[in-house]
Length: 268
Image 1: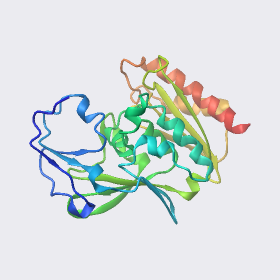
Image 2: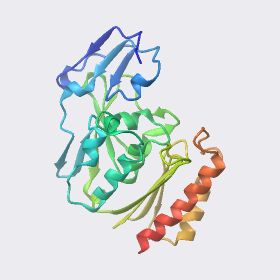
Image 3: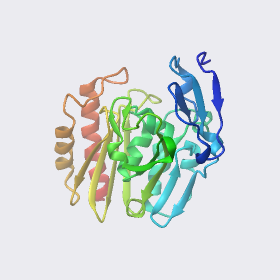
Image 4: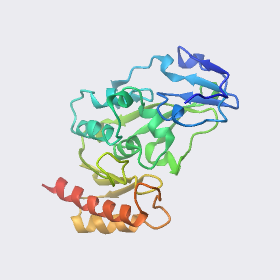
């Protein structure tokens, strides 16, 4: 879709060359959402792909994933750790052709803050630490579990961009199971859950059925029944997401059932 209000496109070659923020600025990742519907407030696009950031790299603290990493690049990463088994399945929870996966970015999917966004589920489940760059180059870290606060709403400040996500070594060492449900075979997720288990106990992340990601932590792996009860308590009426991809009550039922399935799968 043409964005008729856009007057300028800026392609900075480094983070130091990012322009001073001004009203009407929009960060452009892959553009799969940005160009899918009118953006009447957009006046200038800042093309983050021009930064040339490495999609991902190992650091002493863990795996650092650039916000500009394409979903296809994420799915094809070869890192020897148990949690990597979650990456490709999470990417494929975003139903779309290879064309979409080769353009859409990890950061764009996170910052859009759609309930069904699979990158929010993955990064919350793996204790992702978001590196945010503000106007003037100021950096701050924010846990992924605190980033999305409501439907299409994040804790990004005006002029701030998501630069990268660090997945810590402890999270990479955890075993994980992903479960997803939708109304149709190729439909948007109505419930997307990830369970992980490791030295820190068992954790369950619930997305898609809820307006924002929910993270439930347990000291040890509980029974499937206990996990279902915990999920039911967390999915209160005010947190359920209502859209054409499933009635809230149905989404809640599917999420509760999937929570139990995950607990059973990790017990075997």
